[in-house]
Length: 141
Image (tube, rainbow, N blue to C red; front, top):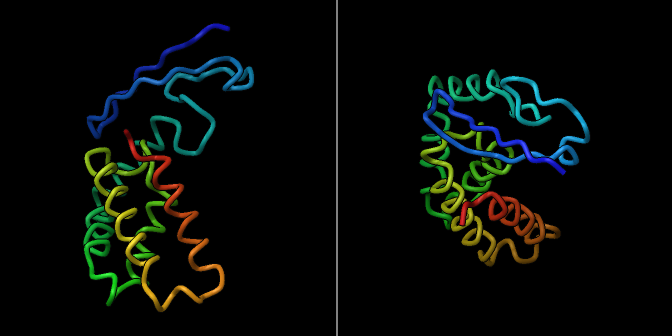
């Protein structure tokens, strides 16, 4: 099995190196500027997401929400963490903030999960556990 290394440098000054095997791409050709099959795995999409975050300040807004008090704003914290569950990955979220925001979301979701008022809500704890697992899977060691 041969390996192909792809060096990616985006406008956000992130540099990553990924390795693809023919099996990982199921025999598909890797096009110039694309390194996978997901909607965000190409130069144009990564640049678009970078422009979106620059124009909207979304990452800062999420960080501000995550820094709220779980006792008072559990629902807002969970909504902000949801954006990281959906968008918190390399090539989408601003690379300089990603690990810090993932760790903060995990910390705050754990605090929300422990609130007594939610312990009896059916499926609540399980739902938060699933969200935490997704965030942890993306956190760089």
